[in-house]
Length: 448
Image (cartoon, rainbow, N blue to C red; front, side):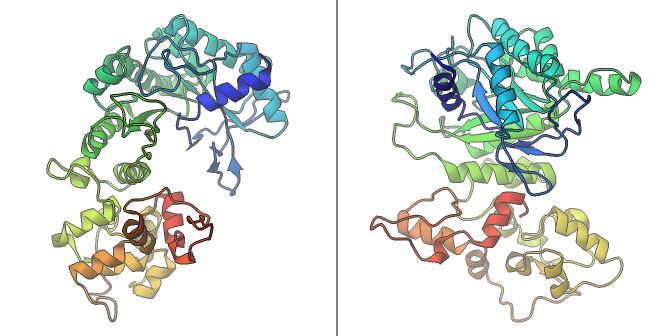
């Protein structure tokens, strides 16, 4: 089998791994004969600080696998074309793609062949060739193999910028049902080892200047959404616990795409729960940057997200006793809970009000989305002029027009698109059904 055929098979097999992230690494090329840099750039269809869209070669070393995880397209019982790269082929392919300006980094994962240790050794050999033979200083994200020896994970972490251990499913019960070869402990043990090693390495770097860095961009994980009956509340609580205990950089959520006929999984043709995935990312942002707890966003009585409202707006509507907030006096933590005020705009408000009293035109200049914020704030004790505050009116204003129209016409939601889609008659719909500028900004920045 030639390289192109292998690349086609193993690139397709890797598409279900979520890896869109910023590098978080400031390492530049360390020698005159080296190539590549991981400094201040985002990866895999993300955006760098200067606006560039940066790409990442995302492949599997092999899609042969000893495991039979029901949700995985590469499970051993699935009849799909199989291929395998050698470490030399991985290194050569990455360097040639980089020299042609196709990529700026590598995401490497693998099915499990022979044993977790052997698979991990093959990945280490590939990364060693890139770092030592080709002097490649670009960003590398490696997915560790559950069950691999801790010493192998240590070696992998010194070669990669970010490493990940995918938890895959939110509960042990779900793992027992769909991935009998895996256990929660086989996933969480290496995750804990990586956390301890990163912490230890931070002290070593301070003490010894020449100490090698271990996973300088941290670790992440991924959960599959919609393959099991686990609720949004269970998933969010697990994410919160992992952020606290393992100090993860990111938890990725991947809407389950049916990859075959399995009795225990949604049938083929079922639409991926893209809106649910989107709401989880929004809630995840609230956990990491807005000071929310999982129990505030959802609870035992309300375990699923509101499809019509983002989690922040939904929380605000259910806590009228906290509003309205006086912009010129409210603490920073409370400003973050106002719909329409993001992290950056809250920081700007705190800085600007030291010099002068702020009014509604000032807030607009500071980046506050008044369409949402108006209903929850006061400026010098006054509401916005002409504003009528009713529960129904607020609800209608907080829901985007495109969301309401889609729900009414289709009875469900589609993934957000930046382009007009043809209808059944082959015609493009009217422009109002496209996402607004506000929708686009929220997706790209996470500001809510």
